[in-house]
Image (tube, rainbow, N blue to C red; front, side, top):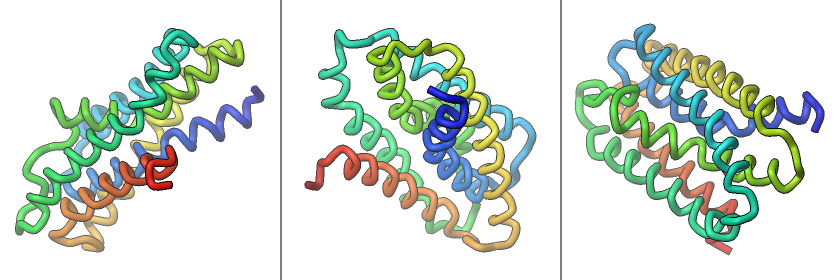
Length: 187
């Protein structure tokens, strides 16, 4: 696999993380350096880790993983999105920091599950996983930081106003539904 192909793959894998980071930037009252570091490094790390896990699992559990990975991603995104919808009509900004604790972990896993499948395909194609995984993680970390910045700018411009958390919840549920659609659930 050539570098341009790997780079395009890394960018594609980072799009869910980008969408979540934009919503997080809009929903937070104030975005700090700590938010950037926590979100970017965690999302980047999980985008690095998941292909390695998928590659390690290889052929032995491929069928099992493929039957439930999209459901797991949907459930995690719908759960976080539902929580955001419940709090999204309020006057105040996001009440829970999405860059901390369990919420951050769930978002990182949910946005990187597709990278697990990529790791499985790497093992089937006898592609060494380490170089591509590092590239995928770095690209995701950079794109996540850009998404958080974009969300911060959108919030300042009052594009979403007080509905930022509600909008973010809708986006997360939409991403989950898109994952189900891509796996043929609605066909």
